[in-house]
Image (cartoon, rainbow, N blue to C red; front, side, top):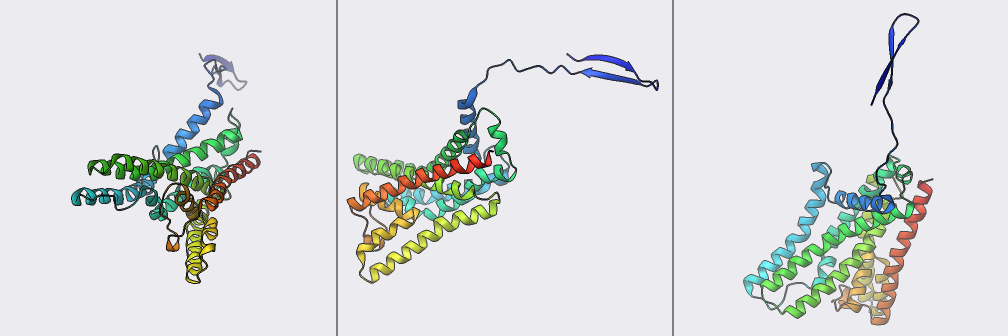
Amino acid sequence: MAVEHPVTAPSGDQTRIHNIGYRSYDGPRLGRAYARRSLYSQSLRGAYGLGRSVKSKVLPMLLFVVMCVPAAIMVAVAVATKADELPVDYTRYAIIMQAVISLYVASQAPQSVSRDLRFKTVPLYFSRPIETADYVRAKFAALASALFVLTAAPLLVLYIGALLAKLDFADQTKGFAQGLVSVALLSLLFAGLGLVIASVTPRRGFGIAAVIAVLTISYGAVSTLQAIAEAQNSTGSIPWIGLFSPVTLIDGVQSAFLGATSAFPGGIGPSNGEGVVYVLAVLGLIAASYGLLMRRYRRVGL
């Protein structure tokens, strides 16, 4: 409780000194785990504009709708025509919609980390019980979770529609599970790459352009080189060229081990032996992204 002590100044004016009663905090201290969960939940909400301005919600929500609408249309066509199968496999859907996914990563990865760098709030995080690993894990997990929601939601729409169309339950469940594995790997890979690129610059615009360049231009370049290789009857090099783009990496993994039809020219996907290289490349990129983020934020937090 504040206590007032009147003091008479030499000039005769009345001056008061107030004891505002600062006290130490005696409540529960929730520690690093709670701080990490809070940072994760806030970052995940922020990836869809929740808790932010209406303007911040427009793009992520629009991209979410764009991802789901084609799936709903496919389901409607399958139900109306009483088709024997869905127009597209579960594992193919994310590859077809890769441009939308890349745009989402490009818009939300800089939002997740560039603002903290620009306004120099990262050292404030580390002044609390949270450590560098907690920050990186929370941000990585949040963006990967947001991407998984974006990519798994249309697969769920396809699956529910397939059951409503009375397609074979076992086949649809197997395809749905394979699709979830594929988009889980895609979410981890794209989240890691997007955060690494965005963490290089505090300028959000530069981060967006860089992420789009890496994810989209690399896919276009690899696809072009694969088409040239097919035209020159150098089909053996097509799977190896696919190692140089994140999108084609995921395509190679799912065509080698998840029964997917490859989007490579001529449908020439990697063999099982080549698929092992693809898996190692995907896991290596995810691990490397995490390691680079740790190194980056150790320096920023000093």
